[in-house]
Image 1 (tube, protein in one colour):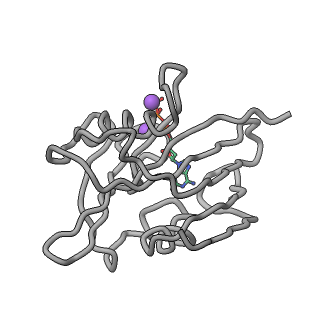
Image 2 (cartoon, rainbow, N blue to C red):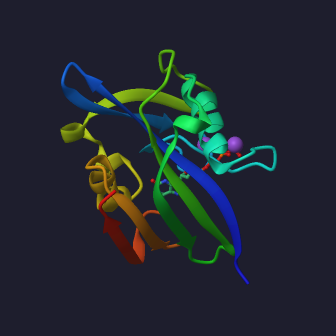
Length: 163
Ligand code: 6U4
Ligand code: NA
Ligand code: NA
């Protein structure tokens, strides 16, 4: 039977003098290295809640301070990979309250992007399917089944609902 592992993925949002922006990070190592993405990682047994895990990962990877209580859960994405017994269950969040200045960590190089300049060509193949809806404030639930090489998916379902 497949083994389900829980992960977080969080998007920091800001209003920059009337222009909406999202913080993405260039992943420097490990799974998804070389891609822009939100911030996140594995939920650990020491995380009291999944929201706390999302905040901890964002704090570690973008060197900001966000609180688990400020994390807004926006949906779930499930990823499978041909030949891998592990199913990734990713809890997706947005967060608007933070302190500090996002800075480069061992794992991520952060950068603010306006919504019309999101680098989808350098992101996971699924992101352009659901991130625009997320940025419009919608909730998302989906599954993407990837080929073994992680570059493209061969099947997906996606449900988008008003928040
Ligand atoms: P280590 O290095 O073990 O501390 P950790 O930071 O806990 O790693 P990591 O970075 O491997 O975990 O977690 C994977 C991250 O990639 C999570 O935030 C989920 C995200 N992710 C995985 N597949 C994705 C996909 N297809 N599309 C996407 N994000 C994905 O947008
Ligand atoms: Na991570
Ligand atoms: Na981690």
